[in-house]
Image (cartoon, rainbow, N blue to C red; front, top):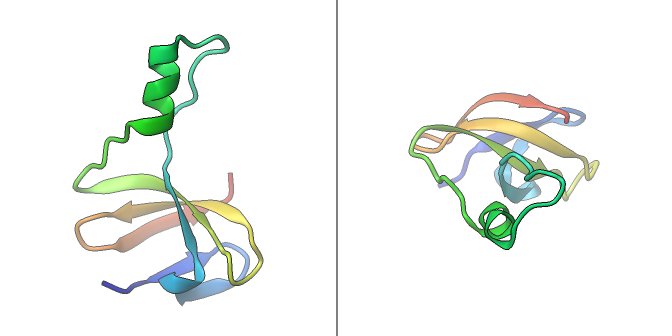
Length: 82
């Protein structure tokens, strides 16, 4: 399914111009255990609904940004720079 995504710098583009970086998850504390580090690196919530994700405009300005996207409909709710 194709959809459009808005780059904070370049405006609306086809999603194929972007690279998906995964969902945003909180960083572990300063000295995490192996279990906490493993969960941070490999486990994702993958919710059916609105989730905050990392995106990269790989065919444009190459900036990394956040996008809140409804995973059921691919509707983009908001985009922002970190």
